[in-house]
Length: 84
Image (cartoon, rainbow, N blue to C red; front, side, top):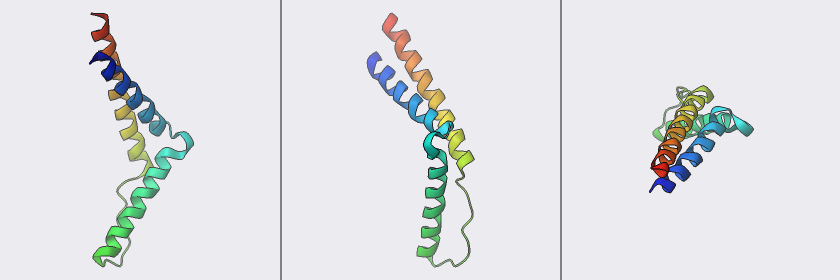
């Protein structure tokens, strides 16, 4: 069980850190994808105006930081359980 926490924690830490630091434009791509999906949903509903912008790159960078810190907590918890 402890190894599982360490592995999942490290994977979350790396993935969240990549988005938080915008490595290879990860946060920018997520923001553009969110905006594109909002435009497609608005078109499917028949709305002709511009959709409101809700998911920006800054939002995804904050979420990536939260996921990265949570992953770090999981990994450290797993390491503490392994040393007992």
